[in-house]
Amino acid sequence: METQLLWFCNYSVLGVSAVLKLPQISSVLRASSARGISLPSLLLELAGFLVFLRYQSYYEYPLLTYLEYPILIAQDLVLLLCFFHFSGDVKRAALYIALFASSWFVLSLQKWIIDLAMQE
Image (cartoon, rainbow, N blue to C red; front, side):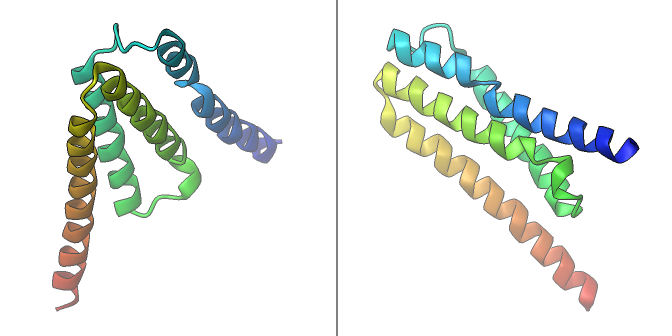
């Protein structure tokens, strides 16, 4: 019984997170406008998801404990691209995506360096 309840909880969270941002994305696409979206709050949410995802993967937690975060990050990236597309500033989107990708790379390097130092 407990295993079934745990399975239901895990997959219901994944299901909800898979559609969490879809109404917002569809509204932006239907309106062809990014009006009403706060760029700083979107970036803050994205940064928070990335930091939490990196923390979970760094300490090698089971994938099901944080699998909703890559889904939410993908939806936030789509929303970010929509924001920049409709505001007419697509070049800035590339800058932000490169910034987040490079921060992920640096955090990954940090684990590699720490692991290397621990072996010596």
